[in-house]
Length: 390
Image (cartoon, rainbow, N blue to C red; front, side, top):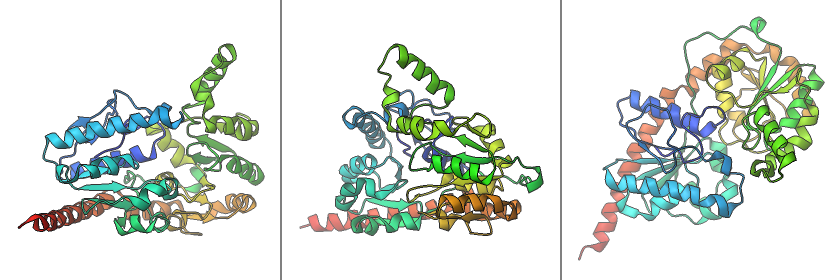
């Protein structure tokens, strides 16, 4: 199970992909599978082995120019390639964008069959996906039908299915509306594509407080960003301050915050995140891009928290308008939806999440895909061997 080198699995705060990997890995091991994890060396997840190129996650480097960061992904992929050459794995499931399928695919029959999960907007690396040929040994799965539909033809031909994301689901009943806080929660990386500025303005227009929970660039929370700004005032050149998300936040979002009705609390995880989700009036997701998977949406529904969102990407497939949340296409519509969100029943949200997003549901879907990948790769190898026979 290859999570890439960027964050520990599970992550201490932000990290949608890594949370999905942690959830899937745990569910697979509960179903009797042996799972070796490839991730940063500080990953605390209980697994049957850990492969890592770096002792700690490299997330803070992702904002650096491409020539400075590309080696990190390849160093991690090299560690994965060495691991699969040393042990007889049945399947490699990689979540490392582009580099994972490229390196493992180049190994051919020297590597086990590969399934690569696509977590992002496929247009950002379209040149790769338009040309990549897994040669019957590397296959893909998306996280939503809408994501896969936007991919190039060559990629869609090698994509076996779309498996919705899963999140931990417990039997704890959701809090009723009357026991919840007034605040709306935004649980996401704070950046322009996530529409954080729209979220704050929509909440102000609706007359409800808002809590922003997520990192700004490489900074986990306000204290880290303030320390970097203070340091830069004395000694210019802090690398994190050059991150585009930081500049956008300081320009577009920070002036809207007052520390009370509009506040940024930084990355959250564990019990802290669970408490925010369970007590929130709603989760607000006003994205400006075609959201591929929507982990936070699944987490909110599992907590019985309705979702107010823009109808882009996978969101219409995750949120049933009028039943588990409300969809609106602009800022005024989002504000109006926030005023009406009390009509959504938390118990219905939680029941739908248990039915659709439970870890066992995702694990069962991937078990079927692993079997299909193994069978297809064996057939491809047999065809290749027959071509080489005299």
